[in-house]
Image (tube, rainbow, N blue to C red; front, side):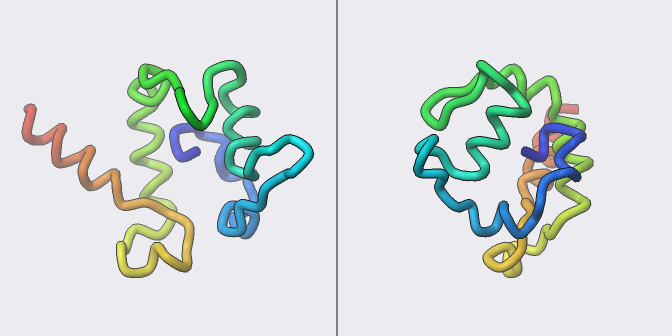
Length: 92
């Protein structure tokens, strides 16, 4: 969800719990991704070009959440931006 600038509107506690909506047979995160990118996401397949086009947004958003790998178990966040930035610098 970090690929979308409006991810601030999503409740962090609900992301951490990621409960299943049994009526829809989807987790909270799957439902939110359906809202953000309708007709482009399901848990088995998604359009990679959608993510690539929004990589800068994802990197920026990632830095606003937890980035320490040792703390990610108990906090939402990501440290993948470090890999993306490394790969970009290697290709420059």
